[in-house]
Amino acid sequence: MKVRTRVAPSPTGDPHVGTAYMALMNYCFAKGQGGDFILRIEDTDRARSTAASERMILESLRWLGLTWDEGPDVGGVYGPYRQSERSAIYQTHAQVLLDRGHAFKCFCTAERLDQMRLEQKLRGQRSAYDGHCLHLSSSEVAQLEAEGRPHVVRMKVPASGTATIHDLRRGDIQIDWDTVDMQVLMKSDGLPTYHLANVVDDHLMKITHVLRGEEWVSSAPKHQLLYQYFEWDMPALCHLPLLRNPDRTKLSKRKNPTSIVWYQRMGYLPEALLNLLGLFAVSSSEGDEMHRLEDLVRIFDVQNISLGGPVFDITKLNWLNGRYIRETLDPEGFAARVRDWALNPEYLMKIAALAQTRVERLSDLGPLTSFFFSGNLDLTPEALRNHKVKPEDLRKVFQLAIWGFDALAEWNLPPLERVLRDVAERTGYKFRDFVRPFFIAITGTPASVPLFDAMALLGRDLVRERLRQAITKLGGVTAAEAKEWKKLAEPEAAGEAEA
Ligand code: GLU
Image (cartoon, rainbow, N blue to C red):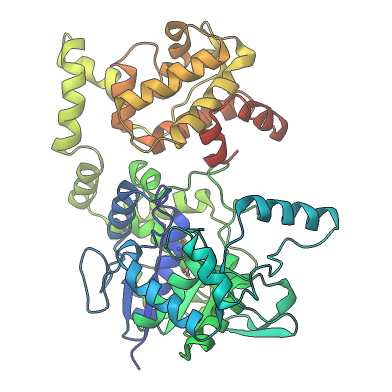
């Protein structure tokens, strides 16, 4: 049987290095055995999925060189590869489960479920569906449907006993059924949840091995049960440890840049980033730590994956990147990389259009626009403090702006300006005074090309990181401050932002 693996990102934000890591592991596993690697877009969360995010994920993975044999852009015999285009398939399969008595329609309202959870909490119980609709008769169901009452479809799960999940790296994992909820499979809008769509697609797309993040271990019993309900063979599972910050907390953009776009814009080479991620599945006996994708494919072995939690160490990435630049490129090759990175006509044209009216001599261009060709700016706290926003407010306004920017669906001029005007208003500053520290944090100088054009061109990731660096320079943000400031942020921004 041909090995087939997949990566299944949800297009709900920036292309995350964790997605690259999962893609690389699945790619190496398949390619090492002459198999196929598939890309599937899991966009059933219609409120949070965006076409822009999907495009960036595809572009980032392609930039890394992780090409897929089948996917939404290249097609394939098991398509469509975008879950939003497969609704009818999930509906048919949910109906199969209903017909076989493995699932039931649940008409409980959000208010009833809230009340149920509250009571469970007060009793010190685990929050789980209480089975209220489990035994509705078919005539009761018909009656409720005739009344037009919305419903979800939930799966039945055993009330007691233990599920045993076999994991390629971890061996057998036991999970008690009484910790497993009667999972919603179809939402009231007729769209599936991750669990149903994922199982149905992995089966129909003939996936043989699923290498995915360890956060899905607790869902594995439900998935295994769904395979049994459908009378299908389950792919082999392997749960990979999540990437960590150097302090061993889960990798988060609060502490480290996590977007692949940032690494690209900073001038990391794709082979260095892949190399760092690949080392998490390479035995240290391999000696030299420089491995290109083809070497990683050859030496990859799930048994070498350390379960301790791979630390995504930017210092090590810098070291690897420097080695690739020095040891693998000749001057022509290096120049070609620099040109692709930022000295390409497209980027230069945009900068020229902003700078032309602001120079007297061509040589003024360098100092005026050097921040477009830099990573983090070397600013002192004094440089950031020297203006009209009170020093004690600076970290707060930068943080509020980050949250506002994170919540933007589109990265272009009007929304960028709207976010800053909004933060100015909320914090009681005049807009004119207010933008100055942003100007310095983002461009590094008190006067340059217009701020919002600069931000639009720099992109979300560099802007975010420069503001984050500025906050760090000014002493950082405590958890208590973040909590306090979130109350000032827009409600939707507060909901989506990571502190
Ligand atoms: N859409 C899921 C995610 O982004 C996929 C998990 C899986 O590989 O099954 O985490």
